[in-house]
Image (cartoon, rainbow, N blue to C red; front, side):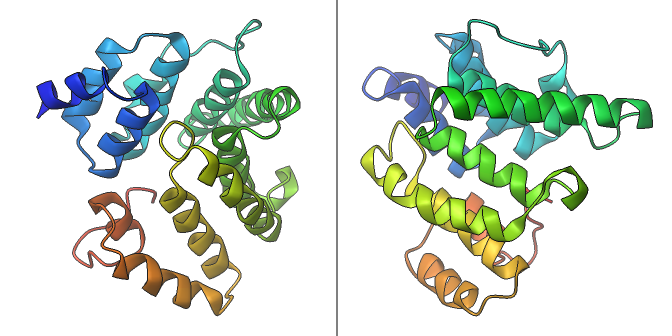
Length: 211
């Protein structure tokens, strides 16, 4: 399986291979992709995905505070990784890491405001930040609706449309919108990969990897 994943990189964009492997929750293959990542941006993408599945704090070690010459995507993924460091951090680091994450994301949005991955990370940030720090679930839902047509332009190398829809369902559920149940039913009827079945709660014996 690992060899198949690495060979697939030669026929598709690296991000597409990461998205597919992530959706299957194949952490072994993701670690292989991390070792083969052709760029710093690609390495950050794998770490951004792998941490969600493993909660391996090694993915968050030696994070740079900034990437001055980095792409908008690099800034956004670094923002997400700093946000991942906040839970379990010493109280005096929570504010520092939160501000650093927010600043990086603001710069990413200014640099590439229509990049699907940057917009996805923005929506995730709005979903999980406390209100006092700028969190806003209803705004996140609006951003995800705006993101969907952007994701449809390049679902392989940008962000899978299924992922956008799954996060839209999550936001709708949090605001108790009846559309959430309809969307969940449609997504499950399509037979999504393991990650999304768990995220949508179809795998009742498992917990969501996002918890």
